[in-house]
Length: 482
Image (tube, rainbow, N blue to C red; front, side, top):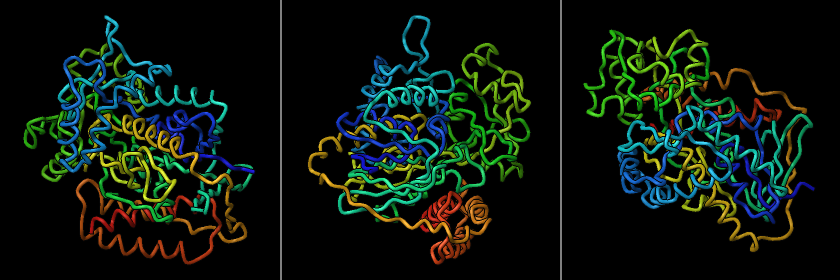
């Protein structure tokens, strides 16, 4: 019988850290949609922000920077938890073997990113997320109470009398699993746009399923567009040029090669992401051009190669040398500040249902995330979820209710083109500066697509699950915008 105390949907930083922090007497299942390392957490380049052994910094400054970046729409309670507990979780992952870059004297090197008033970003070159995820995977795999299923799609999740049942699909077919607690840690929604920095799994599945279960979904239109994605526009997944490149002194230039940020904000290139993205769009309209560049050629080449080895290599693969060339960039969908609404314990209004990481709405980010606060949020509040579950584990029933899922394997597959159409609608109506008229038209069409998906019985395969998720996410975002 596939019964677990806790099921965790998602294997990024939030999902893995939750599993690690759960008591070893609880039986835990971690569901990974694809291979373990394919997640938004592993793509995080910049680092993790936090005040830890920092003589020239304090949590009030970190809190103030986060408030300013978030337009003062942040949840003050959860934000204070975030900044005040950063040191604990940074120290904890260091104990798990995470290696942050150090200065020659052995102290940790901290970089600066847009919106921060202090150098407080701990990093591992320009691949911090991958380093953290790698070490969390090793730790999670060492735990005897944790089972990890890779390449396993969660098709549906339902509330039962004793907890939850989930329908899973992998190469062996469909199987159901039951639990007393369920943690959604399914990441972002990037694939609802034509161009995104997110990985292929970021289709908002957990948010969609939580919505169907009756959870509150809040501020889903709070979408962050990273201002410096590599401007290829030939592939859906855009390569990110980290915030830290501007933190190390890069300039933004327009079509004419001119710096322009002084026309929009006194913080220049180090303004928060939403300010820079909006500035690029306004400058684009003024110049009637989408050609923009990131220029750090005035810095020492060897420093750049050592500081940004992954970015340097990936750009070389595209025919650009970071040390010599201006890099073509343009804003691109990057991160979600809204999501499944949770309290300080990462708990939803549905008893036993939790959410952590990008799919959750803790309110810490306000309407715009401060750079390098995302990995921190994933760690702090997934730990809170684990601790809250541990404190309540004895109060749940000992038995497990089961739910019979109908996979409609004998039914037709969903029509092709739904996801492509949704992405086009979202790119036209909800990109950086929303177009209200396009959003109204798009919302009506998304409602039609949603009715199509829900009015007929289609085979519950990967295409169906992801199309349903994207349509639901688009519906919720556009409903807020209009």
